[in-house]
Length: 132
Image (cartoon, rainbow, N blue to C red; front, side, top):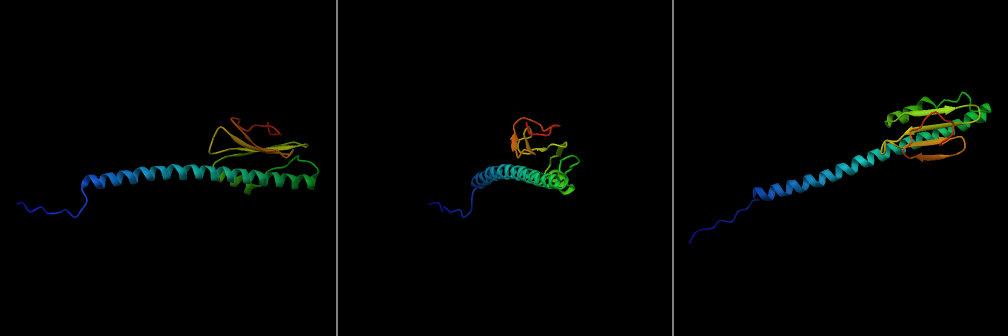
């Protein structure tokens, strides 16, 4: 009789299958993390715009109108750090501030002097003093 020796390791095929499964799982995790990062940057933009609204209302309380209001450099830097550009339009009776979102680049977030804070789907924020 032949002396059959039992192997104590894994075969090359078994190792390759395990590596392939790990690679597929890692790809799913990377996609989820990337999406979460974009959503976090959008939340940062929305938060900065809420702070712009507070700053504008403080300016109005002090000066009696919005004419001359500009967003603080720190708020502009918050939006820029998130990867977007803050746009503030004002006149003596109102203001609007907006920024393009990261997760869906065709969308923008807008706040204005009427208290509106909303998502503008497929609209790039432009020169206006009220959210469309």
